[in-house]
Image 1 (cartoon, rainbow, N blue to C red):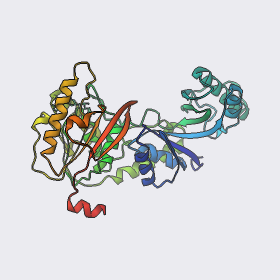
Image 2: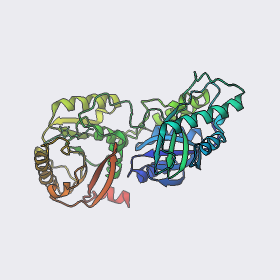
Image 3: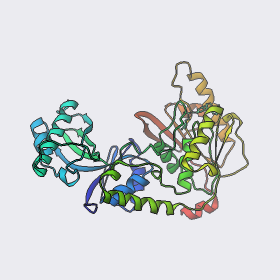
Image 4: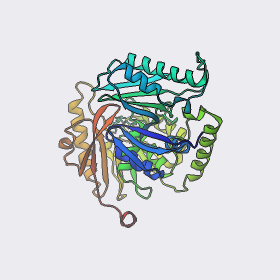
Length: 385
Ligand SMILES: C[S@@+](CC[C@H](N)C(=O)[O-])C[C@H]1O[C@@H](n2cnc3c(N)ncnc32)[C@H](O)[C@@H]1O
């Protein structure tokens, strides 16, 4: 059953589709379609395990059971019932209609949509297995329903909790960044372990920890479990194999990444998180205001997300902070800077226009990723050409 071909979808934050596309290609799978927040590819159970274990920037990995147009609940019922749910869900499987979204569609009642999909799957499985009552005492197969412009996409979630939950962040500051977004920021910065790395407003250390995991080639899902590994012994075996390979894929590079913050309390959390992620030997956290950052090291990379004045009255303080960052960062002339900030006028106060600016959604908050590319060190330049 695990060599069955699946249509797989990696869901992403809006703006990260191209980053996730590259990650999937790197795993060796060809992309079949990309749309807002979704990257599609084909593969078997092995591909599902690898995607869950290795995708750093995706939110979830789904198996799409079918896609069709429906503008009436009758049509939703009939077309859902026509899909081969028994290919995935066993007799004792638990299959909640766990999530639904409906955008620009005739069928907008979410509770009716969930109820009808559930009924259609029950009726389909009832006919296949010859039973009327389902105990639903076995493994979970959460069904995700998306209706967009009257096109219904029915998927089974293979991840369980979102992929940002790596299993290392027990401690988070007041405004923590999603791990998937932090990893994407590091990937977009083109940082390599040969170059210095600093997050001078590091909070609970997410960006530094994700960078350390990237530098060491540690699979982001190694310390957590996935709902699809409970599906059967064959699925569990695939995960065990993929985990063993991931253990061996870690490299022996040594490097030291730095995080600093003005708040000593969050740095304690950052150190505890780094230890849980198994990267404590690769990172160091220091209490230091960004205004005091100075270094003689060259060609470094700063990746950071400063506060953006969430509370009333913060704005003046925030503008001063951005101006200070601009002054301090310009004192590091051959460094590159990458700043995620929800404040649309950041560049004005920072004092420099970004080489590139990209819109990204961090938990549905619209943010801007300001990218200031500095020169590459000669050795890295040669390797990247
Ligand atoms: C949005 S949070 C960063 C969250 C972080 N990426 C994480 O994952 O937890 C911004 C951080 O900037 C820090 N900060 C504010 N002003 C600072 C300053 N002048 N110097 C250094 N850090 C500062 C705050 O203490 C806070 O931890």
